[in-house]
Length: 80
Image (cartoon, rainbow, N blue to C red; front, side, top):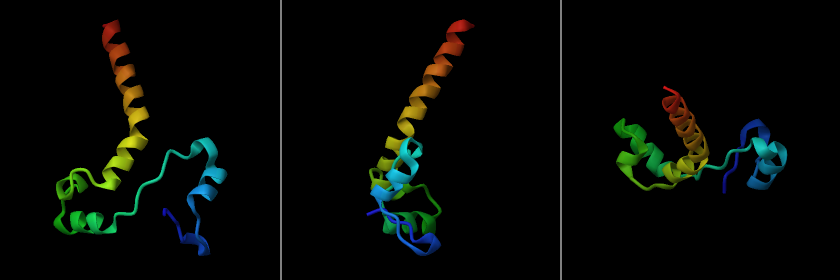
């Protein structure tokens, strides 16, 4: 489970969703071992494990933004 223990308590998915509503982009899995290995080796997460949970979660969160950016770039190029 995604939990933040900062500020003296724990915050679960439900509480985060209720507190942030539409501002919440998503959750990133806890993959401490993969993250630690990548940091120790000085490489990207995908170099340690190409389809790890963190990379998949971040891709899901960023996909709508990447699609919007691609659409804006295509619109600019078609005006030229």
